[in-house]
Length: 210
Image 1 (cartoon, helix red, strand yellow):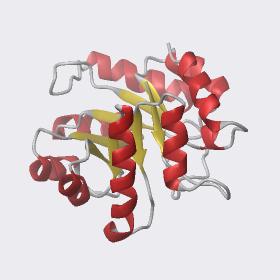
Image 2 (tube, one colour):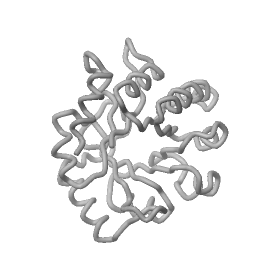
Image 3 (cartoon, one colour):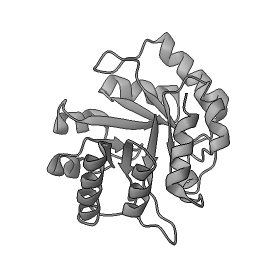
């Protein structure tokens, strides 16, 4: 599984980035517009949701729980400084996907107990898309967290092993090694958008996920 996190460059806007990811076959998109108000994010979310529905892709919004409920997005991703997972679950109920950001096993455990559906775990390495970056995990960090999750038999509400998605400065060359640590998937942004042909790059990256 590859999750695409919306971003922008000098040539590509947030919605264009999502369109290119979908064209490349990505079927899990997170709209992430940092330091923006709900009113600024809403029009982008409505357009992005339409694109994702047409492509049959899961559509997640970063941070804005109320907006997720308002427009009926598939779910929300909550960073460490955002609303707690348990509070979001009370607001949204069981029909929405809730993901939480983790940097340590303790973070993962907290989100799991609060009812998270998946974990976004990182950063793998330094990334310019994040402010106030948590300590770098690297391959050993993922191996340790995944092994402890398995030992604790962490499962989501569907009874499946709790999905864990690696994120943070990941390139195509990293994917094989990261997937061997036991994570469920990879989240990408800049690797796709900095490519000469982003949609083709997404298509290629999807072939690397085993």
